[in-house]
Amino acid sequence: MSGPGTVSGPGWAERYGAALMNTFGPPQRVLVRGAGSHVWDADGRRYLDLLGGLAVNALGHAHPAVVRAVTDQLQTLGHVSNFFATPAQVTLAEQLLRIVTPGGAPAGSRVFLANSGTEANEAAVKLIRRHGGPARRRVLALEGAFHGRTLGALALTHKAAYREPFEPLPGEVDFLPFGDVAALREALDEDVAALVVEPIQGEAGVRVLPPGYLPAARELTRAAGALLVLDEVQSGMGRTGTWMAHHLPHLGGGVVPDVVTLAKGLGGGLPVGAVVALGADIATLLGPGQHGTTFGGNPVVAAAALAVVAALDDGLLGHVTEVGDLLRHKLAGLGHHGVAEVRGEGLLLAVGLTAPVAQAAAGHLLEAGFIVNPVRPDALRLAPPLVLTAAEATSFVDALPAALDAALADAGGQG
Ligand SMILES: *Cc1c(COP(=O)(O)O)cnc(C)c1O
Image 1: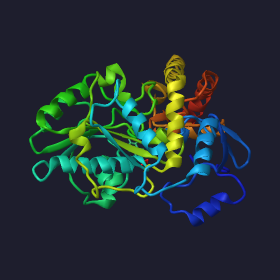
Image 2: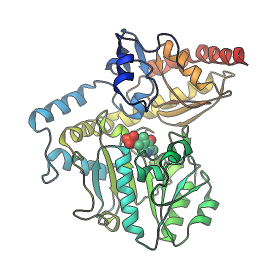
Image 3: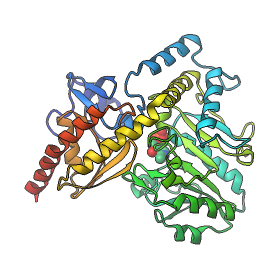
Image 4: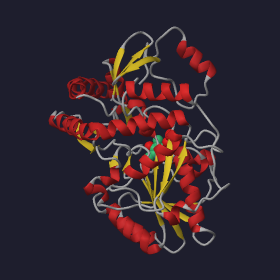
């Protein structure tokens, strides 16, 4: 949605356009400050941030624990090369091994720390290559998948508009129908190195895998000698009220994957990604010299991630379930003719609309002081800070009908 005055502040929009590559389209607002679940624009207007920096600001904006962790670490030791270890890096890896599977990761599991979700998936692609060798070259992903923008991760990403300008992409990737166990069984030959899936497809509009898919995928990939890689970049780190989305009993059914990738909420706003290889066979696929990063495992971002883990341990996981349930039930209970369904888990939700007016609805919500993401023409994605309060959630539900009415009226007027 663009319109008069959508970008405010003294000349920032023009300067943005003159200085930054146009990869994101025009920015909606210039933001200057955040606290809790709110951000403020350059004109001093306040917004409830129901996008959370794209599922990143797990503890909201300027959370004291993150600020303290980062400040203390930066004052103590800000960066070292990976020729050296730091306590923050080691402790974070230990914590990830604790939380990645209920009851802790199997013996021999190991972590590689990267800087983003894309990079975590690139590391997973290298694990897949090492596992598959020359004989197993095919990788399976799902229709609707989003795994990132670098060439290896992009090869696993389904959307034509993202892929086509950069083809040929590396690897032999086949995309299977979403949630279709029979198609997976059919596709899993002895030339398949891995299946890569998001338990909940975020970019595709918050699509939750059907119950039974992940357990079946685990059984089938194991029998075929292929790896099961779960991309929990968006769905992990407490977003669903469990540490990982696949820990939800109806979604994961107790599966232990071979690889889990993480990022987004992990750093509470700082750039950090992680790939967790489960079991010694997988964790030793990459040896000295076979992968690396300059910034990965940086102690400042590791300290921020440790603050996020501590907060989730300290009751935030339960809070996500509570507020997520409240938000979902209130949205469903609106009974508004513009709402077709409410889907998702915890605080990763989408409001499915009865008409393709998401863009216009998001624009009206922005004017009313709410940031949401029109992830698809007919869906609004909500991925707010995990610290969102019940009152904040309710204030959004109260504002939604007017925004939907206005968006539907816009559409009616045009038609
Ligand atoms: C956002 C996202 C990525 C890419 O992460 P970046 O940090 O943007 O590189 C990968 N996989 C999923 C599921 C995502 O949602």
